[in-house]
Image (cartoon, rainbow, N blue to C red; front, side, top):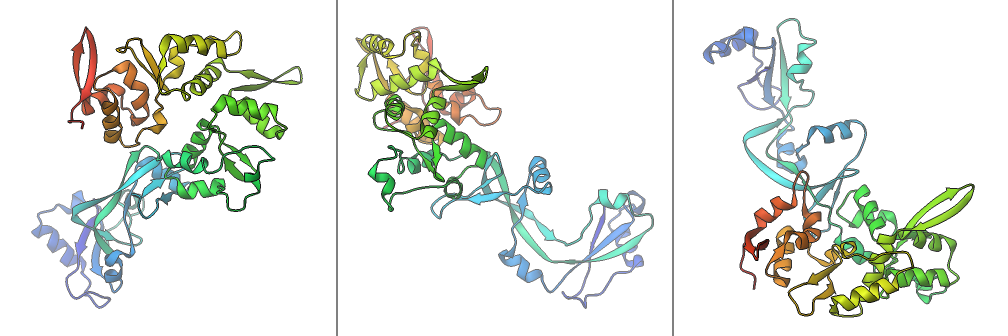
Amino acid sequence: MTRLSPCCGMPGPTAPRRTREEVDATLQVAKLNAAELLPTVHCLSFGSGTSGAATGDFCLLELEPALCQQLEAGDSFVIRGDKDEQAVLCSKDKTYDLKIADTSNMLLFIPGCKTPDQLKGEETQSNIVHTEIFGFSNNYWELRRCRPKLKKLKKLLMENTYEGPDSQKEEDPSRSKYTTEDLLNQIQASEEEIMAQLQVLNACEIGGSIMSTIHDGGPVWYAREMLRAPSPWEMIEHCLKCYGKKYVDKGEVYFELNADKVCRATAEMLLQNAVKFNLAEFQEVWQQSVPEGMTTRLDQLKGLALVDRSSRPEIIFLFKVDALPEGTQDRFNSLFSLREKWTEEDIAPYIQDLCGEKQTIGALLTKYSRSSMQNGVKVYNSRRLIS
């Protein structure tokens, strides 16, 4: 360890400097063996700049090693949040909550101070370094990994839906339009997380503005209308990519539709026209509505629709995970308000996105619900009274 020896006397450059003899005497009083310490001694004194640094001019931020490496490599971090939002810190691919941590130990700001590891390789003889303390603090900011706050992103995009090149909305100067930079400034998430969510929402960029392709008629209706109308090729290609993939074979460009995506989007279009749908009738109409050769399955609707098998006849209705609260407790409250008891199979699609790093659905259920057996099946209900 390095010896830190606080100097006595008044603050400022006129404070007396300790000699080697005084340092050795202090070690003896403290019953420390000088042979077990590094030879360099830091004698600390409070300088004239200390008071300014101690009143909030600086903040200390604790970083995990991986983030330190990113910062040292030249990457930058961004603190995001409006006045009514809890601030978050974003790296290029992750989001962190910012929390103030108090400490009973005084944290000192010492410019140019070297760590024991740095001193080991360069010190060969005993010497005294007189160091001026620039500031101090009794707290610091710590980071806690959190989920990106992306609900606001869909809300902003819905202000700017694309309705074709001839739409009067395209000529409206008062219409809300957002560039990628605008979204980065307003959404509390990292750039990679925002871009990934834009793909999930099937958003596209036209003329520098990010636009939503979500429409009241449903995603399939929208894609069909874009293919029928004299739309720009970039929009037609975008729709094809949303529900399939592009590939090249022998120099020719092809688009292959993804059956699961098309079936899911078709189901959403059918379900949003009815509050509740007879399950058997829905499955028949659903299968008839998809292209020939595609097979519909209920597991294609995870996080989109919910089946009530206790009802007679059994029913299905639209219940989208992205319409639920982002907060974990609020999410569980909302789910248990809809249904008192859930099987893990039914509730899993609606809480999967709440799982943090190395956290499982089972761990979430253990923390926020109680389990019991019902007709030989394990079910989960709220730990709290739901009104």
